[in-house]
Image (cartoon, rainbow, N blue to C red; front, side, top):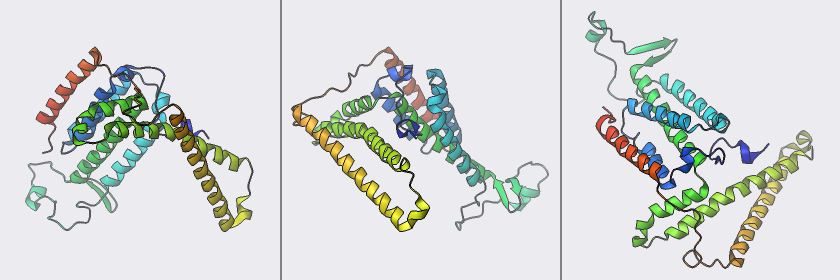
Length: 292
């Protein structure tokens, strides 16, 4: 069991370095926000285009399949389950409202092939409304999670915090501590692997002792895991204290006095092309992507 490499989402891919890695983190962050915002009040066609666009970006960047296998696999399973469940959900979700069934004259009219019920399996049926709702739900779920994981996969934690700090500079006029927020976020992202390492070490220490859980019983098992959790908390507090001491030894008193530049932000030609495509992206969304 290796928690540092088996997480289904949030891992950073250091190698190979793709064109997505080389983009400025601010540009990638604006693109991510566009993928998260544009599905709101959009039609189903736009959401499907977003899902296909995210897959196309992954293919053109030539991201190894091993890096996407876990997170894409779980995401596809969740989206498939959401799609199937929503398809067979009752029309109106058990809410008292105006019936959605077509007029009886329309239903028996020989001049039209309109069918509101698309599939019926016993007491369950798939209607046009439930199918549209299922496509909307599964597509927006895929876009939101996949685009976020793709951003984390191709952007280092230091780049994320540097980009956020630069984009939040206007908030300084409102007396908001932008540098402190960026530093806290950086330390938090760097502390996550330490937490996973401590959990992994404690889990291995428990498994190597070959404890017979059946003989312990429920109460003693609970006491044992309580001791493990207490030990985990002690180790994490000790790690946090070590980080604080290391910062004090290096003379770190405040972010304004001890400035740490995590990443150099520079816009290149590829960033300009990405921003140009982003303008076209938003133009298409405003013209064509609205919900009916």
